[in-house]
Image 1 (tube, rainbow, N blue to C red):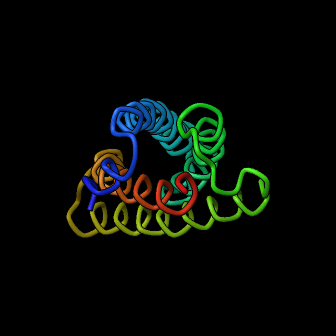
Image 2 (cartoon, rainbow, N blue to C red):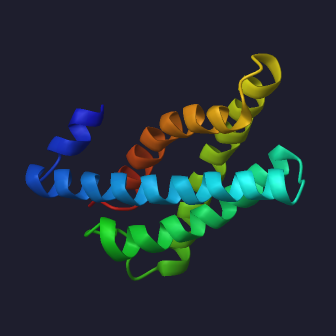
Length: 139
């Protein structure tokens, strides 16, 4: 399925777009984990609450960078509120999997919560790219 997304139109631009998506996602991921760690270890918030807060902040940064730098084609350019709503909806659904996966790995497999976050984020990274590219950023 992923190869179909890349081949859908101009391959060289899609690879450039995917490379930018990787850079943005990696940067936002480190912000997300840093916030998660800070909120949990320094501010003593419960790790799932910290995870929710860090995801919400990271989402906003990610959205801004996606529309400004990553994706050239915006299906809903003239409907920015609708575009933002769909982006939020995608993120909420995927974030639910993120928090659920983090909880399952941490509580039942005794994986360190930061490692749980890392594992689940790698999985949701691909899911988000596919959903965003197909729903919001292609014609």
